[in-house]
Image (tube, rainbow, N blue to C red; front, side, top):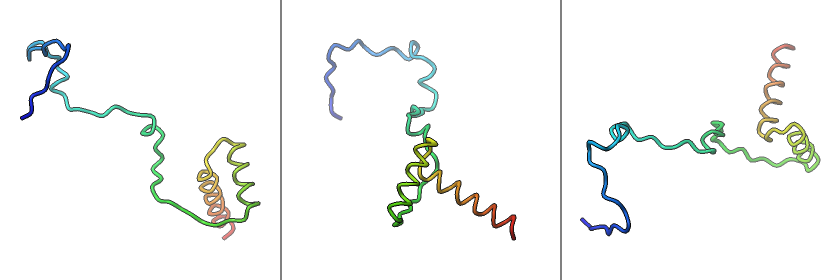
Amino acid sequence: MAEFKRRNLPPPPSPAEAPANLRAPETAPTDGRSLRATGRTHQLATRVRAEFYDELKIYAATHRIKLVEVLERAFEALKEREKSSG
């Protein structure tokens, strides 16, 4: 086992002085990416007309939502319309 050089560090606390959280399970801190996770894991790539793309981007930016949210909402509205008409 390699020996590590201690530089300007105090000696470690004794087991009696160590806090109880040392016996608790270790958990990773929550970061910003984890908090923004949406569960979207599959990529969708398609080609569209430039006019459609521009309108889609403007709509999303105006409503401060992601492009995928516009598509998800549109698909849900389409399903509801078909369900109510059929």
